[in-house]
Image (cartoon, rainbow over all chains, first blue to last red; front, side, top):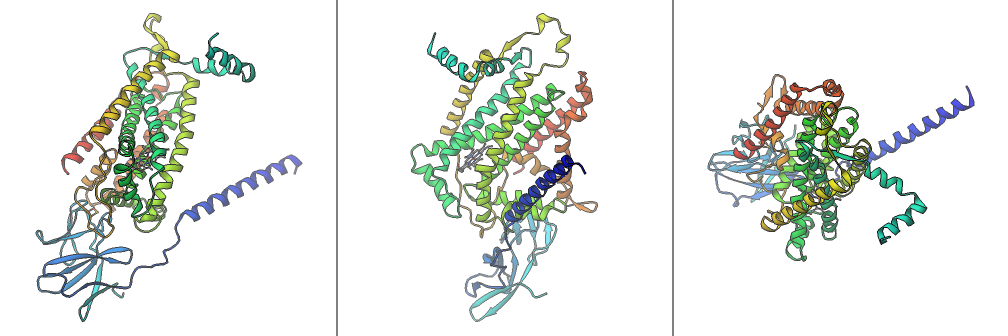
Length: 142
Length: 359
Ligand code: HEM
Ligand code: FES
């Protein structure tokens, strides 16, 4: 190999490797580390005297909002309150009797099944446990 | 010799600036029926200058953070002298800048001014428009209010339908799984550092190209009799007209900012249900509305994925027009392409109007 072309290879190879590693480390830097506070396993969502039958509240379930729904018969259901369409936070609409997403008028029934509008999937359901006065909500064990 | 001439002479002796002055004087502006459209690039430039000035001023008080962002803008608007004015001007001028950039782009399109040798000017211009849209998208979140919070949730969620790289892209943009204060910090850095730097760099190239090549002439200009093809020196004649228009634009912005001050809305609460009337900024409305019209499933992919892919393809085709519109490159009229352009303009207008009417 000629001296000249050897230097060319060395130089362009060196620059390419450098550029590659700089860019790769910048991308790695920009991708945030997995959050230390992982999704909550069980949180207290409300107390038993808090919700009237046929009403609901939003509570904080780890990093996401959760929806605790009290049915007409007094029972409870809970969902991750994140719309399966484009992630808006849903709410319970007593007047319509559905869980409703304001962003694109998506509707879910009280079982969390998508029944109208763009949402493609049901809401993620959570488990409800009542212990004394307190209502706990947790991720269903799969 | 006047003071100015003496200064020029002083600098020329040392730095040969006469060359630069000649370079600046070289350009002339063809005079014809469509000459008015030549003004819109300059208007966009002027509005960007306003953005830089008001943006830097806002930076003296703005802070990021889940509480601080909203409160600092409230502080700017209620306590800081002329703070409301700075913020209103920044917001109005941002929107007008994008409008002006769109008009500029379409006028270049219909004049076929992108044809050889100006392909690269078109490309840099398109990149400037994309960055302008990016500035608008990232800036919209900065006040951390309810509407912007949910609009950003929806707007970034769209990226997740991009095949393969969608999920990492989403995390990269949001700085996590969700739109959180981490997203706000990211958007802030992008909005005030990365995009402005890129914008200025590309703008320098864009203007350099225009200066090197001179203004484009309409197709068929060279075949016209010489008495029909008049032109005007850019410096100082056209520049003075530019300045007059800039003054008018400045007055319009001042009137808008004073009589329609930009609203702040409610502070974002990530654990409250999304309010009604979530909508993107007007310049994203046509895409948003189109996606809404698509059915949930088309064959085997979701309507959104299809929509994004089609939009992506259309944007790429639009970006590389100078390389496939061979007819204009040869100096012939390309009528079919005019109809395509007309369709695009009408599509954008109709979808935007529907987006607002159906809300
Ligand atoms: C160097 C240039 C710029 C700097 C330093 C800057 C800085 C800022 C700051 C600190 C804010 C938050 C204050 C507020 O929301 O009122 C902001 C908001 C915003 N910026 Fe910029 N900006 C710059 C350029 C631009 C450009 C070129 C655009 C337009 C395309 C733009 C569009 C916006 C928008 C839409 C907002 C939100 C306004 C609002 O809702 O109040 N900015 N900018
Ligand atoms: S985000 Fe809920 S319907 Fe679109």
